[in-house]
Figure 1 (cartoon, rainbow, N blue to C red):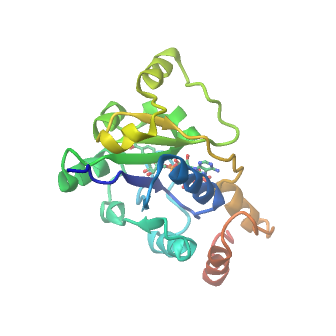
Figure 2 (cartoon, rainbow, N blue to C red):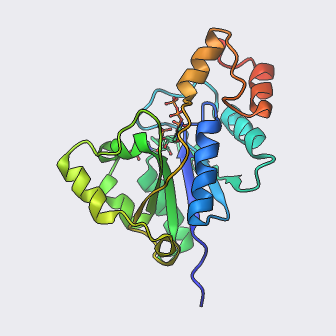
Figure 3 (cartoon, rainbow, N blue to C red):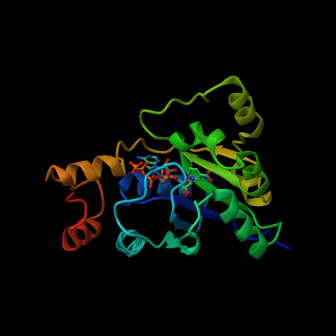
Length: 216
Ligand SMILES: Nc1ncnc2c1ncn2[C@@H]1O[C@H](COP(=O)(O)OP(=O)(O)OP(=O)(O)O)[C@@H](O)[C@H]1O
Ligand SMILES: O=C(O)c1ccc[n+]([C@@H]2O[C@H](COP(=O)([O-])O)[C@@H](O)[C@H]2O)c1
């Protein structure tokens, strides 16, 4: 029997979603062979202030961004929890639904990898998923300390086939384009009434303008 397709989740605050999210993940999907990437907006970011846009607005912006991008869909499960959106808890829920054999990949940027040791019960993550890591400009390739570097070296795998065969436990460092965009920069540009074209899809720009978001 064939193993089920690798299910990829991409968690984020998406306040708002931008090309720094979409383009590296599109490249990652081509490299590792993902048919679908599920965007997972969080409700209560564990390590960030509460988002400026409401959950409904962030979802609406994601829907605008992915309307013409069939690679992506959206999962709203984290919006149903009022406690911090710990990834380990979300993945446990998914595992309970999908069973132990389902290959699952959780996509993060390099900035998230570098601070992974601060995540809630981070050592459990690789018991539940693979980590698929996109490059991000301004963040070094080396981990914060020797212990974390050894942990990374033990789990890194270049053989993309294994991510489809094994249910969890591997880390893929993808060779994705460096896109120097952050949601923080976009919110600041809106506040200063500067243009954000080329930073996020036109449909999201239109939504932000109609909803009057990020004006301070
Ligand atoms: N430009 C980028 N390149 C690669 N990965 C990115 C980029 N922007 C965000 N990510 C990754 O996407 C995920 C969700 O990020 P998030 O929604 O918090 O966006 P952000 O731009 O980092 O937001 P903020 O500026 O508000 O902190 C994280 O794993 C982050 O590492
Ligand atoms: O589980 C944690 O402790 C944890 C800590 C920080 C971030 N995360 C998750 O990582 C994803 C990216 O987070 P962020 O803050 O960069 O938007 C998002 O799904 C968060 O819920 C998870």
